[in-house]
Image 1 (spheres, rainbow, N blue to C red):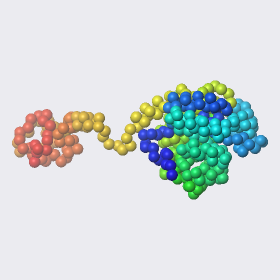
Image 2: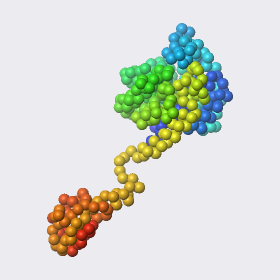
Image 3: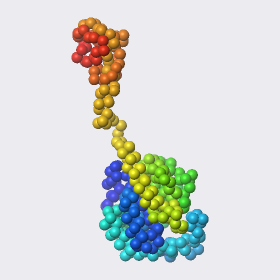
Image 4: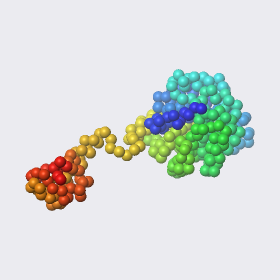
Length: 348
């Protein structure tokens, strides 16, 4: 079984998914252009959405997004606008991603899509709204590939059930994504502390974050999610954030992705090692900036050392300051002058 994410070492995270979704608007040419921009921006993967409106939503299916941003009030009508791609389109996009050396991914919204996407995928993604869609989850789990599952609008009981159901049906590697199922998500509703809660309640799983907030120039929300422990980060991706409708308005663009890629690189550099210990560059500081026990007055041979004779001073090349109480009461083997850095060979 492929263990795509657990094979990755700590330094390869966060794994960043630029979700093109259906922002290609049915154009293969535009989809490829977005892939190129995602590569240049530093994404690890691009993700699409694979569905047909007829198998996704009833014709009387009200909107759950901000209709001021996306004016279509029927889910069926909105999804019907962008369900033009078929298996051949996704095969071409997969091949294009392979050529550009970026991972291809797409969220299947029906069982047929699971089957024809399977040869193209290193892992599956389950959307928040399908966390209780057991037939679809079982179909995906049976493919025995890693699964990323979003948890927008879900409680812990539902998440645990879905995770256990995936395991029961053959999935061994499950990445749990904090997500808020609002389009867009207000900053006050982002609740990034929930990443910490998921880490606590699912210690054996990789935890990630799927973001629907409006991006700022510093990509603060994605950075915060990473610092809180999100190892996989997913955000919608577009070439025009000003374009009205669909997912453009809450997506990041090339410039946003580039900013985050630079920030994550710097933060990863700053994070460094997991274990607290002196590092190589501190060796000279440890030696010269720490203190030794030093004579503050001349002392005669055979004389007993007391606190009036000694002081702690830099450098730490002699008897180190933590031996203060061990040195008191010792005698010196020879006459020693003021400001002499004591060594163990000087005392008995």
